[in-house]
Image (tube, rainbow, N blue to C red):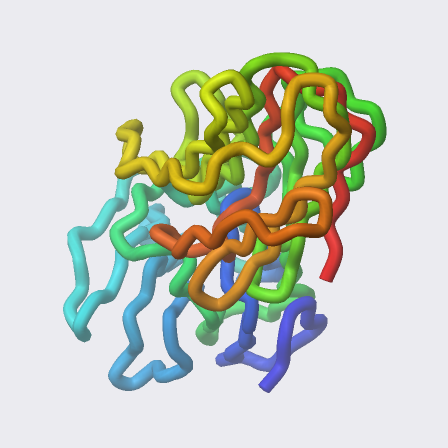
Length: 294
């Protein structure tokens, strides 16, 4: 089974996305309409008859003057969305881009924003893109885009804080982040986030608050603009003025947190780690580098 990118595929065609779709990941389908209907499906599984759960179904119908959006769950269709007209004409070239945003899919047609489609299923569960007949497809590609201009791509060296780093490809098990610097204040926060926003903060899979004055490092998650249950055990192995190397290793069931090559704690996954796409560092430290590695 093919993986993206693919060029000049037959139709119908099924492509596998083993890593799924993280936030601010986009898929682009380019081609030429040949008939009156062309369907695009972002699915959790490979089956098309009956169709597996489908987070986004797009049906381009030039003759009807509409692009239908819908979802399939437990073999049942959801409620159609049909507004917006159809900027694609029969026998014309088209470019459809689908961008995963925190609350919705952003759909652009021929380079212009067309609509948003609110998430009805977890976008992290998508593993396949299926295209139907009705068009000659030139290419199906996938890439990560940065919505926030404030975000810098890792690795970072001597960044000013606060700062936001983009983690391309998310944080699957096996990956690790290394933050090196010197603690300068009584509180320094590190957040592994789904999106770039900090006020209000996007969902955060791991929040570390280093508080040497309180002799603790608080661990938590932040979901739907609500803090969850804190974990505070373990003390604080570094003080103001100390240099440090913070290492966050992503395991199958938890994060392993280390300071200066000594294990400090583990933090069980409360949210899918693969969907983490940003690291935000607050004030309270002078940062030398932020690295990602396997």
